[in-house]
Amino acid sequence: MTDKPKIAVFKFTGCAGCQMEFLRLEDEFEDLLKKVEISYFMMVKRDNSEGPYDISFIEGSISTPRELKEIKELRARSKIIVAFGDCAITGCIPSVRNFIPQRVAEEIVYDDTSVIDSFKLRGIDEYIRVDKYIPGCPPDKNLILGFLVKSLKDVRVYHRPHAVCVECKLKENICLLTSLEEPCMGPVTRAGCGAICPSGGRVCEGCYGPMNDPNPKYLAEVFKEYGLTEADIVRKFRKYAGLAKEFSKEAGEF
Image (cartoon, rainbow, N blue to C red; front, top):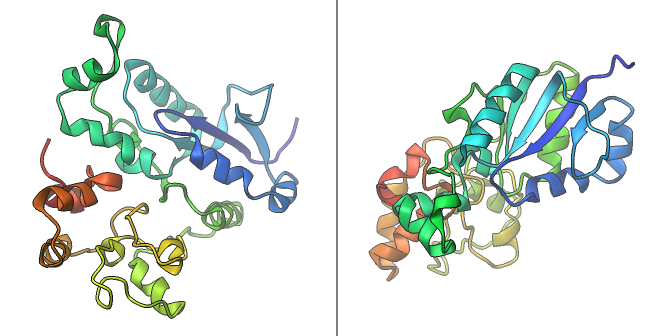
């Protein structure tokens, strides 16, 4: 038996990329194991405990009755539930299928839809109470480490609500939007990635979800001035956070 906090990592409808970012902690992971017990993590362990858990990291959204049942059971067995990554928060890229009829989405993939038992997907806080959120597709490993360190010290966890543009300014990047007139989502996207794409000369695609109090209407107007079509603009806002209330108008209704 151990009195170390028990950590669990679960995956629902998602790509497993958030779990992989956990493993990128590498050297830090060894030190972390001195402070916590990994009770459940199917990607890295053969023997997994059924709980209870102190902190459960939930990757992925909910899209099937089985997942709905399991997420409610996990809520009952977990002291703290963390929506881990954008799929768990807003549905992320898989949520794009919400914008077409469920029947059509199933028919595109399956010849026999009678064996499919699914519904339009949602982030996990649609169905259970969520205690903490770690944004990103995937979250940067330093966000994960910072969350764990602060949680173990009982310090309030705070994630940046400001735009990616702030990180670009700190790195003295040229502004791709205003200087090069490229359709960058940085002005409405939450920071935390270190402006990794703009630093490499690529526009921000919005993979950390909406920043605090964004102005998507104005950015959409700028995109239109730069020659993007209405369909182009919808795809930009729908790609990672189309279900987020902040982007609901620009991403289109479903």
